[in-house]
Length: 162
Ligand SMILES: [Zn+2]
Image (cartoon, rainbow, N blue to C red; front, top):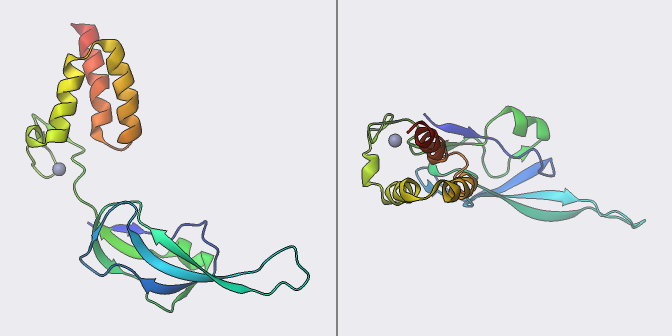
């Protein structure tokens, strides 16, 4: 299931699509440039203000594979259009949000094989509770949407019950 990405509402609309910087089936990471656009900037503070062309880029906030573009170079996009129709479809990888007995409940990946999860889990398991709290705060900053950030809660709860 592809995720629909919309142009940010903060862009200086109307904008003109100059180039699409990724083709279908390309890999997208956070911060990958998706497209380049131009817009008319009207300088303020002078009496002889003349509009000038400026350029901006749109960088991805998600990771995945480009499914397809819904816009093309040369398109002029209003604020309305940006809000109402998706600009690009991206297929995001599994976030392993549901875990059952060490396996991802969505894609079936063995989570104990994943080094990052494993080492973090080990650190959490053997840390004293205070450090666990600090680690949890750090983790939830690094992985705000990760299921990892739920683990320390469970561990703490389990620790309190023991
Ligand atoms: Zn998964």
